[in-house]
Amino acid sequence: MAANLDKMLQFIDNYQQQRPQASSIQVVRSLRAYTRASYANKFWEMVAGSNPDFIKGELDDQSVVIMGQSIDFAHFMAALSDQTWGGNLKSTLTDGVLWLSSKILTGRGYDSREYTAAIGDTAQPIEVYLDKYGPKTYQPAVLTEMMGKFASEQDYASDLVAFAVGRLLYENPTLSVKAAILEANWFNYSDTVKRYLVDMFGATLAPKGIIVNGAQVRSRISERIRAYLLIKRDVIKGSVFNRTYRQRIRPALIEQASDHFIKYLQQALDSSE
Image 1 (cartoon, helix red, strand yellow):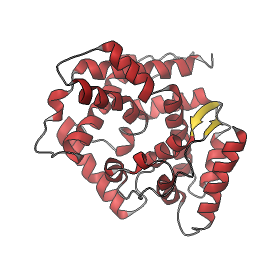
Image 2: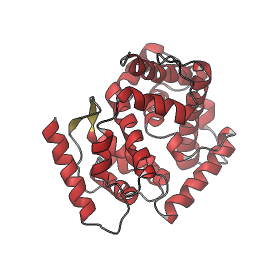
Image 3: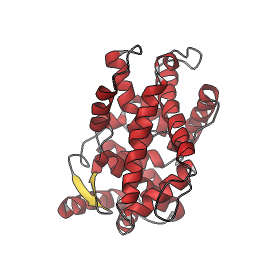
Image 4: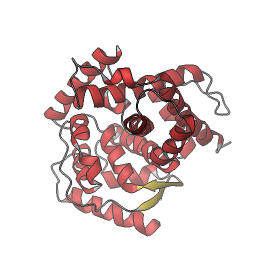
């Protein structure tokens, strides 16, 4: 896997060196075009504000190890793109529109970084479930199987490593994308999970990694899953004035998905103890 990572980093570094005027944030956005076609669809264009068309999967079909975690590199790069808010005027304006839409739909304005990546992965199985079985049934075992497929441990690890690299790029704008990934590779994964919980959900953690305000964290995760679903289905695929998708979402679906994500986060914290 080390050879795979070297190959990916070499491609990224060559790409950035060919664009000396572009910031690392802009480079990350444009590199999304080299992940997977499904990561460059209309939804992600709206979220990113200026999403490139898919070119070629140069960054796809590679498993690498970063922070001691098995990472799907294309998933990681797409999640990193989700973390790079702004970067150009169109993107900033679009994010502002989505913030306003989330305020109207959910009562709270969300930065697009707050309901993509890991939250998007957690919400996707609910979408698949509703499309296949409709809103009138709740089959926990079926949703559990879908969670394992669409929100796997590797998916979450890819998302959280992307979170760490994204923070590095904002805190150190002069870092190249390659340098940020290499620096993050030295981080302790459990510490990354802790920062993610604190920064994203306001978690309070006990010395041994126990989430003290677990109910509050769970509630905030659930709110963002719901925001993702409503923004994607009622705003981007529908109309903010024709809010029909909210009527399909059983609270039990969101609660089960939230618990799936929290279980992963807690296990990641426990693994360092």
